[in-house]
Length: 164
Image (cartoon, one colour):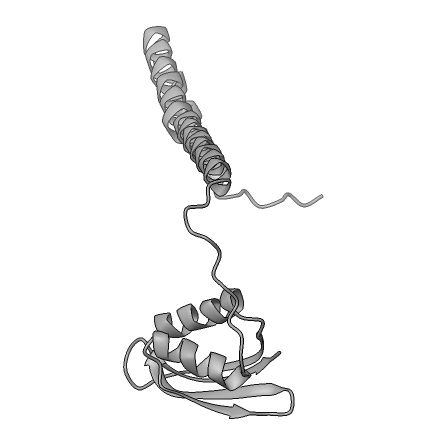
């Protein structure tokens, strides 16, 4: 019967065993105590402390969420400003007037479904505010929106279609 080759770790264990046998009883207790002390440090600072920190962070996030949720619910019942009046008139007039309020140069064209708006260059934030204004202050529905990055940072070109 052939013997399996000795692995690389067996000689290391043999050397450790020889070293251990060479220690006195007092030295063995000291090395064992040091090993337990190091193991305790690894467990405390490698496992327990990170878990406690993660738990404390999660609890803080939950408290923050609950506080914000309570504030939002309390503030939701207050209404300092009346809802915006719904704009009436022709679709093209509503779109042009709303775009002018936000400083947007818009080319509005009537289509069979509603209206098509072409904006060559405008600020991204102004476009979002314009769309929000139309959503809350008119009966127009945005049916299609193509937005492309403009030449300057923060600038976009937009093609939008609206239906009544």
